Image (cartoon, rainbow, N blue to C red; front, side):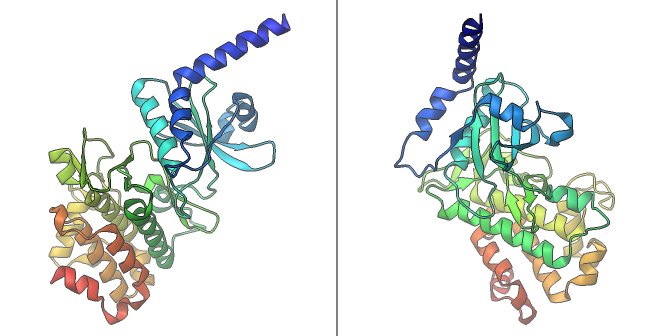
Length: 341
């Protein structure tokens, strides 16, 4: 009977492996000449034990594509395990896409994918554990014992811009993230930023300038040009980053902001900039800790990232360089003066 049980269980796992895209995934990850890094295949038993049978007490967060659990592997390492909500063609596409995309990336400000498991009814992804939650939590549901300082906010912005610059220009093929938002930015033990959630990200050809695709993403962060045309370009990620930058400046949500009087955060922010009322929308801690020159420069950077004409937005590499030089902004920024003249 024990032998029969093991055969049934083995057949069941193989069935799930095939249904969850295992054969396609193994084929894509088997190429050694396309820049893919090693991706481990974990057993369902190993991950079930690691998460204490997916105990509710281990839940780190819930999202549109699944639930994330804290786990401990047999070697003692702490991981985050994302369990998909369900298996359908769309979610399977996101799952395989995230594995393939993250297997191409090695950057200090991008969350590391350690592997996956395809032996259960729904597929599982295993990431490095990032202990300090999401940027969204720290901005909009802050712990009074730890509040983000101005210096940390600028550093987080710099980390994210650096990661996006790498994705856009330094990886094996340009990658558009397509869902940059504060909920997809994690903070590690030193409160350095890690960009996460690559389910809808896409690689493009070196000679391509945009993707033509159905509109997908998060309300409040979507590039208006992309929303109208269905063309997602490099500057669409720049727009989304601009919204995150404004969140860091204002501690307001992209939509349903209490001070926006029914407008989106982007519109309210741009109106304040236009009317020379920037201080009306800034967070009190930003006003207290940042110098006027630095605050104005970062706000101006946010403004040009949100330009309605994508061609007039800076590249994310230019944004990253500007943020790198933030300590020199007291003397004025040649870059910003050039862009806004």
